[in-house]
Image (cartoon, rainbow, N blue to C red; front, side):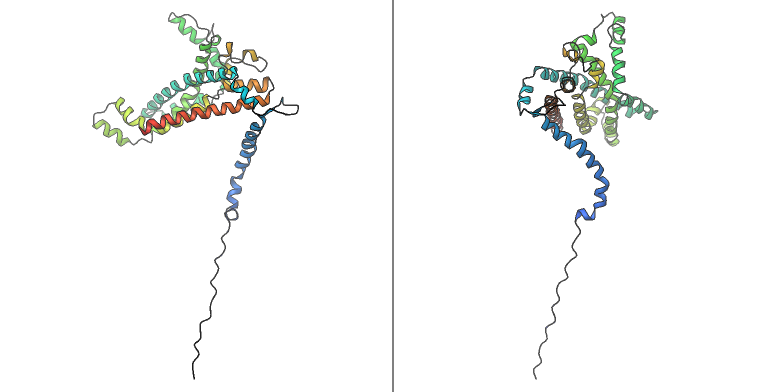
Length: 317
């Protein structure tokens, strides 16, 4: 009798459990961080998008919008007042940024070498940054006053004639740049100090054993290793310096009803943001003000890219 060969029953392979989607699995984490993105959407992306839409229209803030297309940007390119504001802003930025970076670097090196009262020095140098810009502008307005200012008193003491700082084009720029330098030197010194503390001390010990002096050590070791920190400080200083507004606004006592004196005599202290404020809230031309704002954005981005490329290229060389 033939024995029939039995085949084992086939078992269907077990289907793996369907993984949960990332949204279902981590929904509580997304919910925890959602307030930031909601606030950024409401107060960041939507206003930016609306400003771009507004720049294509003429609007006084009350009536209906009138389509203007790119005509406001065309006028912006030929607006001599806007180009004058760009020139003033660039000059003030240069007068403030480069001395500020030098002073911040020297201050950071001194703080890094200090033995006692380091925390006290750090707080003292950081105080100008957290002080109200309006208060600083009022104080500097007194310092650069023509008749009773401290600067002119020092000049007279050494036999130099008085300078009308707040009534001459270059005097206005120097006064605003001095205020910005005073405000940001301590902040950037703390940033440089943080970078200095990341430099290994073994490099300095090896340099001293090889006979390198303090100057050679700074330029051969400290400065190359601080290049990323220097890049950060330069980019941040560019962004903040090209958006200066409160300094000339308060220092030169510019008001919304005094557009002829905006930025001081000859508009010598009229920065880009101050010009934007004048066009938007003084002339009630919100459409053109939005176009000016986008022009300022492009200028800031351009300068930041140039600074980043210059510092990075030197670092690669």
